[in-house]
Image 1 (cartoon, rainbow, N blue to C red):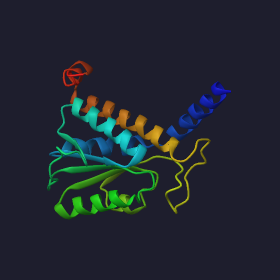
Image 2 (tube, rainbow, N blue to C red):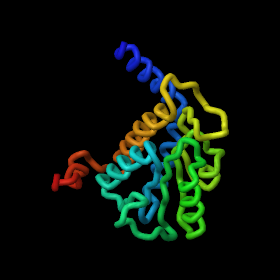
Image 3 (tube, rainbow, N blue to C red):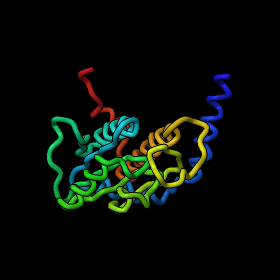
Image 4 (spheres, helix red, strand yellow):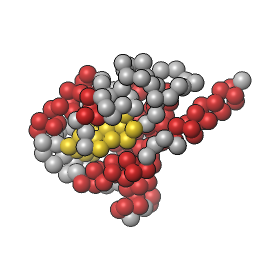
Amino acid sequence: MAETILKSILQELTENEKRVSQDEMEKFADALLKADRIFVAGAGRSGFVARAFANRLMHMGLTVFFVGEPTTPAIKAGDLLVIGSGSGETGSLVVMAQKAKKIGASVITVTIHPEASIGKLSEAWICIPGATPKSNLEDTVKSVQPMGNAFEQMTWLVYDAVIMILMKKTGRTEEEMFKLHANLE
């Protein structure tokens, strides 16, 4: 039974991948490269995925902070706020996007609904098909999984794809990235 369930999850992700735009990922990667500093934010499970993305951005040699950590500095003009939010309406993240824009920073997002509040504040987005109980907007796919699982899983894969795009654009190698990997573990 577990094999059947796992196969259905993988099939769902394979189908959802067909609806993710390579152009959106390229534009997202370009925004990352233009930024003075990168601030990454997400709440709940999307926040866990966003933390992993911030970690890989650091391995790329970029200056990156995860919002909410005690060592995260103030955002300023020229910086970039990356928000992962399935619904695009998570209250605390909407406030962050508004504040960043007011200060003169740019905002980009990974979301199911680029037409939602965070998407409207963003210069670029990656639209990921998904379902979320946190939005009044219609789900863009029917999921075999509970809650926002399919969005969070696809977001992880999309963030990893963006890292691979960045590697290609910058010529950064895996060996160079590994030199920045944590060594106090």
